Length: 110
Picture (spheres, rainbow, N blue to C red):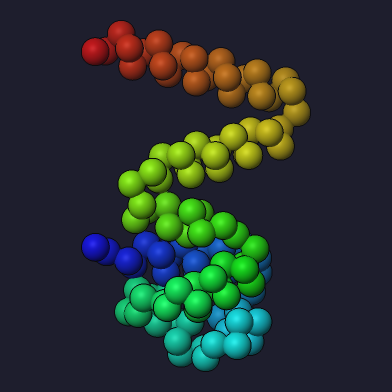
């Protein structure tokens, strides 16, 4: 099983929080080298280290594991819903119209 995506996701969330690698390492009590090797996919974190990292980043495990678990579509759907929820009502309606159009087009192609 490929775990590089776990490291990529950790890096993505770290950068979204405007944290340097050294800052995340300090927040977690892990070495900078170890956290860097996790982000590069060279090492798979222990369960304890994984929990420490996701807690420091304030993300859920499923967000980080989205590419390696079978139920990843649920995570992606949940993230999409969260993004849509943050929009004003008029823009929410626009997104729904686009989705309806896409779904209609997909069903017509089958």
